[in-house]
Amino acid sequence: MGRNLFNLKELSITEIEAILDQATVFLNAKNHKKFAGKIACNLFFEPSTRTQYGFQVAEMNLDIKAIGFNPEASSLKKEESFYDTIKTFDAFGADLLVIRHPSNGYYEQLAGKIETPIINAGDGTGDHPTQSLLDLLTIRQEFGSFNGLSVVMVGDIAHSRVVHTNFEAMKRLGMQVYTSGPEECRQNELNFIPLTQALSRCDVVIMLRIQHERHGKRLCMATDEYNSKYGLNHENVSLMKPNAIIMHPAPINRNVEIIDELVECGRSRIFKQVKNGVFIRMAAVKYALEAD
Ligand code: ASP
View 1 (cartoon, rainbow, N blue to C red):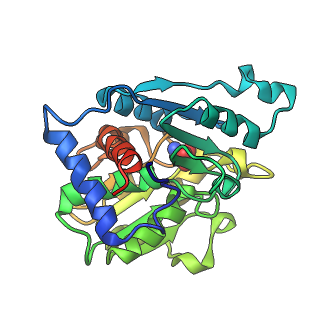
View 2: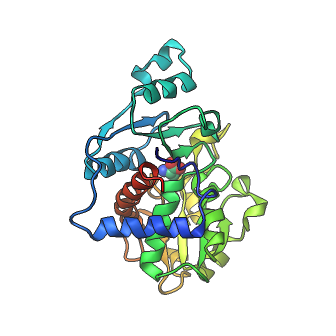
């Protein structure tokens, strides 16, 4: 039968930790259960590199056959609706649908109408559950647990689905969660503090890209002005605690939210996040296919 994974709010802490544990098993195991004969459809209605191809690698690691989807070459161009497009892949008899779409909560119109289990690979500014899970795995690998850790997410808070999923899940896991960045992107209810204060206080610093595609108008500011006010640079990185780490969901705009030299510095876990993403997505696929 399988089950959906729309957001992390629906999961208990025990279920979240179980997915992280399963990802760790996949990370360490040479032989593990495969899902040969299953078919997954990766339906991305928005651009994506890490999530889209990370899911494809995860599915291949599990011996699942993966189908990609190009909206530009589909019947969406003949004005077929999103709903009918998804209903079509459901009717094909696929075993799993991985969907990214620019509308917040797109999955609400599908719930109960689509038999194939769905993993949400990002909905507008809403949620990005597998990104949040891979962030959590990266943090747990570093610090062993979550309780008592402090984290700040810096940048385009209002438009970031990564922030919205992480904020809720990290608080529930016992972390002190802050946000920081340009006033235009502030969300008061998300514990907004000045960047210098956040950097000296936090164990985890998550930098974010400005989501230009979700702004009515672009946040008009020169790159170096943005970096000196809201980005990580040689000066303010020295404020970070000795063992604090830098993360970023990527894509990175080098020299905007983080200067080039810091992207791969000793504190950075950015490419470790990408690696963890494959194992988290394997665990998410297993979660969706094997409802218990
Ligand atoms: N890749 C992340 C997302 O899909 C972050 C970003 O695009 O900036 O939300």
